[in-house]
Image (cartoon, rainbow, N blue to C red; front, side):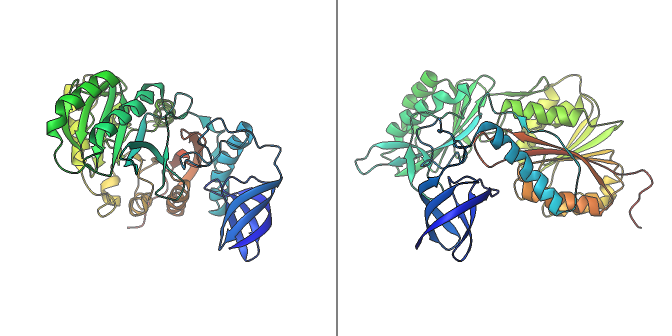
Length: 418
């Protein structure tokens, strides 16, 4: 390890300061562009020791856990500069791919707070239950009693985690609790617990009643249900399976849905790839018929049941399929007017190649990873699509994460080769 003085000249994609170090580029968490710092450097990683010259855009972080907790990376950066950096990151990635679409201003969609959280429970040396998040890039738990990025509906989750931790920590040295804010309370899934906890059911039920939890599951299997949890997509009630994926914030979901619905054009038939429990399927089905595809059987079962009980929708066909191993083919997509895909962080490279070879005129991509989005976008453009516009959506306040919605179109004169 080397002690070095570094000049930070930019922020990297993960929100770390970048400098030219003694042996090449060095990435330093908590450092900002324009700062001169003293850091301990090992390889391409640096640890900030002291500030010799601070950035004028540095501010006091509002959270007392910042710098230790690994959840937030950029609370120390001025709000306006933070927003510029988030937008400029996707601009830079697309420019490197030779793409120059209209890129809208950053849509701030995090004010109401995140509605999903995983809290870790660990047994301390004294046998007590510690509740919190992990320090950045470590397995060291940072015990917390509040979190500024959580939705108001989830503030009780920390208290519930403490209650459940104290009840169950004697059984196992560590487990996790996933909490999701649903329309009628909190949904909780206990993960990694050792053995059967049925003997604690009455105490767990009391905690659930006290903390506003409507369902508690263990490893994805419901343990007790005080009220059937539900979420709502364009007026359709969906009962999510335990730990089901939702967009991180309600405001983010709304911004993405608005983008999708105002870009359908004259489409009459859509396919929703990686559809989950129907975040976009149901709003689309108010306007056009939808083929909803996902590999998660429980998500599709929830979607199908909700469709059966809903009114005023166009036809929805649900299909279970692993889109990484078996993407919809170009021939299958030829009869589709609109393709919507919203993959996990690894993106949808195989599916993008099939879309690029298809005759589909309109594609909407939603992505939670700018790097894999830029790769998939370049595949579509190489296949004849035009990347028309991109909307960056910030629903991960103070983090380096960014959600993206984008529209691609293809001229009616362009057709793939036979």
